[in-house]
Image (cartoon, rainbow, N blue to C red):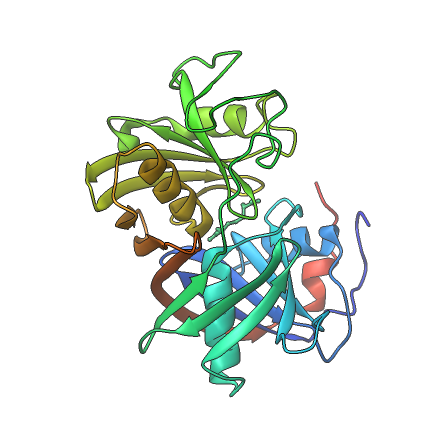
Length: 292
Ligand SMILES: N[C@@H](CCC[C@H](N)C(=O)O)C(=O)O
């Protein structure tokens, strides 16, 4: 689809939002019955003023009782089966349109429930983490995914990490100072490390207290973002499993704060603010530019 001249998406309304700084677009295609090709997602990511970390595309639900099926695109056009901040933004958009205060949204990783928790505050039940090495997935057997050796090593990266799947793969490195980590250099190397057959989202976390964690994230398919909800969940799970934190904590990211709670039912809940920045329409010219 290099150099598309046109797209049936041109003219459709789109919402520009953020979930504590995680840049999200919401595109509701349920009525239009259209799909988004990876090249169209990349074209939207290049559109002036529309840049996104994730594009949440809503499609007709697969099962009765669900509000929508969500296809989640990263900036590079790849798909993710989970996006916590994007899901909370979708809850805002559909709630504002009168679809209800509690919604069920389907993803490739299963249904997620999301609900309003305040004026601009939304929560999502991200489900149970998957912790077996095959489920992450890792390319090699790791008997204890709380402490996986990074082999081969990468210069400047810690020697070991915790692995968690929250519907998408995460590697969590506990470090003394996340702010001093060279994410631009380490992020791509770690995302594409041979241990991760589906690549991975990379977190650098510092435990401040039992209930406060500082976090920076390099997202698979997107790069460094100001916040990543599923990474905050993965980090809380990794920390609690290793006795480094309580099962509920505030996770501070460059864009803001999320409250993450890993319940006795094994489900991980995330709560935080969302913001509607503007509503606009996709323009035909976005799709006319050839990819460089
Ligand atoms: N920002 C999201 C997660 C985005 C998906 C990720 N880049 C992937 O490919 O798995 C969130 O808030 O969870």
